[in-house]
Every structure is written in C-alpha cells, then in structure tokens.
Length: 139
Image (cartoon, rainbow, N blue to C red; front, top):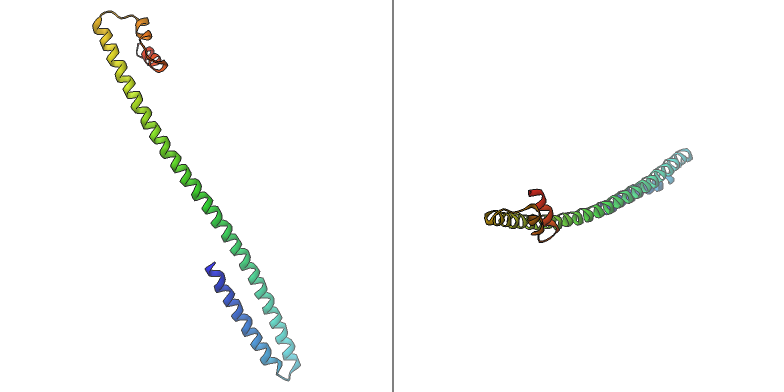
C-alpha cells in the first residue's frame, strides 16, 4: 500500500525522462538516430508496463498473504479462548474429584470404625454413579 505509491512515482519519473529524451531527439536531424531512440523508448515503455504488471501482481500476493495472516490470527485467538475455558473446566473437575475422594474416604473410615462393613453396603452407600465407581475401585 505505501510501497505502491512509491513504485508509481518511480515509474512515472522513468516515463517522464523517457518522454523528455524522445522529444529532444526528435528535434535532431538524423533520422537513423531518431528511429533508434524511438525503438529504445518503445522498449523502455514496454519494460515499464511489464514492471507495473509485475508490481500489481506482487501487491495482490501481499494483500492475499495479509488476509491469510488476519484469518490465522483470529483462529489462534479463538483457540486460545477455548483452551482457557477448557483449563477452567479441568480445574473445576479436579476440585470436584478431590471433594468426592475426600467424602468417600470419610465415609469409608466411618464405616470401618462402626464395625464390619460389607462390600455391598459400601457400594450401596454411594451417592451417585461416580461414587459407585470410586467405591468399587477402592474396594
């Protein structure tokens, strides 16, 4: 974007110089020199046109790359946000697990202290499926 204006100015300057030389040499009496200079001018104009075309192509590539970068940055931000949410959920689940384990340990100790506790009694004392699985693993 900033570079496009600079290249346009350079190309305009080159074309201006070429036109000036063309005017100067058209006043010259030697027609062979004039023909040669016209050929050089035409060649210069053709090269300038090719350079303009190449510049436009490069600028389009840069614009495309910038758009891709913008899209990727948005995806990164979205993924980071999801990671933060998942980390919070993991921490919450860890806390819940720790509380469940503490609760289960307390119940098992209480059952042990109160007398002989059977396998079935411990399993049936579970509050939910998670406790049931934990109790079965502990036994």
